[in-house]
Length: 391
Image 1 (cartoon, helix red, strand yellow):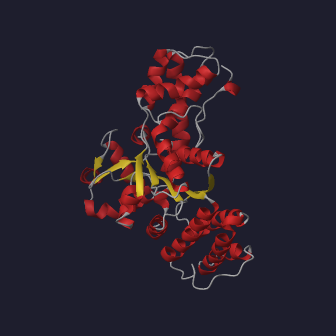
Image 2 (tube, rainbow, N blue to C red; image 1 turned 30 degrees about the horizontal axis):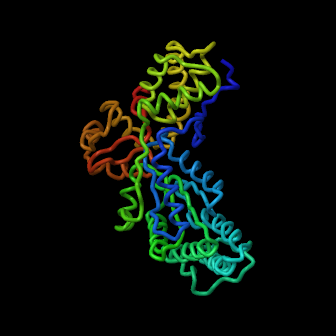
Image 3 (cartoon, rainbow, N blue to C red; image 1 turned 180 degrees about the vertical axis):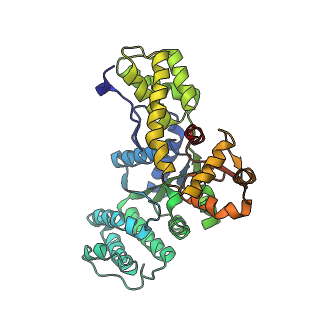
């Protein structure tokens, strides 16, 4: 069929043509934003899941919906935390932009000006020279200038939250790849949100990250479990998976057989990113409508080849030779995790306690996580199969 009309979007964070199975999560976020706008207590949210489950899609969707709200003023900022990043440097230009928008609203002008002065102090304390030069305000001595991220970021958030409250709106911060924040940076975010929550300021945080983020947040601050609503973003159900593939095809005036749908759902295990890959290739290999079982089988070969050459390979390439040994040992224990650390050590012929630093390094890179004490599993669905195909 015509590849130009192919409705599927197999890209990193690309919005699918049919967003299914996430209505409850999105509704919960919407309620939190609206409660905050009314001055009512509202929890922030953490979206947790493996790679390819659509966390980034949900963050982008939330940002777009916030921008389009007609009855509520929302000032949103979205960040993707890079590995080994610098939170002050990342967040500074976004906070500056929000405060400038708030400074032109009469009701929030005074609070926004105070926020800009605090931000100038923050820039100086963390040596953000370029950012500081672009702020035509004097720093406010003694405010956000200690060089202690926990204290200074909290003071900034409180000032932005106060300005947003005066303007009758909400400050919404969305942060992807939360697991790449340092322990100090995550603590600073949590402390800042706690300060705003205590003052009932309209500040909402939506974070997306791998499953270990819940544990990282709890380790950072004991009250994190009461500060966030945690949502596990997992595979779609069989019904949802079928709809995610079938509806875009129907919307283009074409069709797919039930047998082909069954094959695609089984192959993809309900993971949203895989559904997009399989749907994309099934459309392209089909000569005519309806897409049939033969097309679905051919799509599987093409999709796996593309995943092996891109989605999987780029992740394996980030590991050192010793780290690759570790994940290959995991995969050799079977396609289904989790895997016991002792079994991995036995496979490698090494003492389990000596493998701790290597395991920690792979976790830090976001390749594996620990679903339970003494267990390890891949953060990328299908990765064990991929490693076995390389043998």
